[in-house]
Image (cartoon, rainbow, N blue to C red):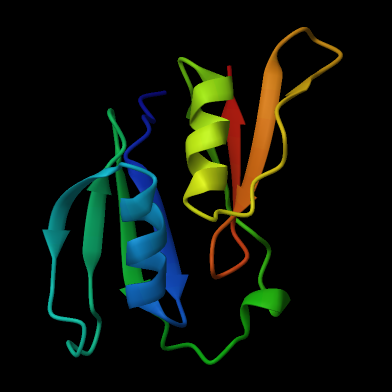
Length: 118
């Protein structure tokens, strides 16, 4: 089998708000259309893949869709946690998990989950 990771596609009710959320995390912007564009289309480099944000046109609320879980890594979780809190992100405090690694969690404006591992 030759299936490989390409990226994550997010349909956002407010794509500009989602764009600012991910940009504020320090992700590198690859492309961006004008906010009044019908589909809006912005993309971020995930370092091995792409995160695409599109204007949602299906009319289904985010609470009716299963959330997407985006897994990220942090080289210095305590420092990143402090920076996210200072930037007013709703982020859980880093927690050591049963497997020995540390995790913290964020939720984007559309209810998608971000799991940050260290």
